[in-house]
Length: 112
Length: 114
Image (cartoon, rainbow over all chains, first blue to last red; front, side, top):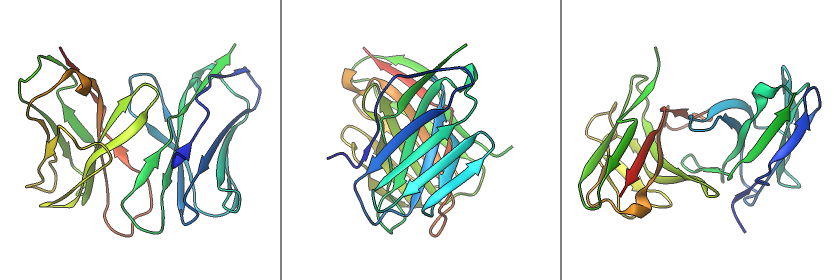
């Protein structure tokens, strides 16, 4: 089992729709969860981070964390073509400091 | 401006010709790390450093070396590059122990080994 798993996609949604991106992780002791957006050939940029169970909202983005089920999701409301990118889920495994593990990413395509 | 700077951004080289990819950060971060990114495999950690003179292997260290002689610099050395090291490389940094926030990434270095 991979430490952090994401569906590679592509996930295709029309402009204005809600895009839902999911991520599961293997280590129950994980404490910190991040969503990065990456445009092709560019470096990842942080979209959201979440540490506690429940929802965290920032503008059009909502991160959801369920530690009991070991999944974290990212909702993008009112999707725009500029949201078309690969979304990387990253999990800081265990209670320690060092290891931040990335999923392989989900490619999102938002059509006008 | 706070940033992580990598050089070169693009490089085409031949098998066996030693090369170094430099990484420098101006944020006084203790932690620095190198990743490679390949299609379908995501970001994989090569080496990381917790502070000056403290380095450790990540998930895919074979064929790479690093050093951390100064806090701001963390070069990645390929002693004898091979075609399977063709990849997109990212350097990243963040503050040290106790910091739970994001990694700051450089712009990436695209390496092709012929």
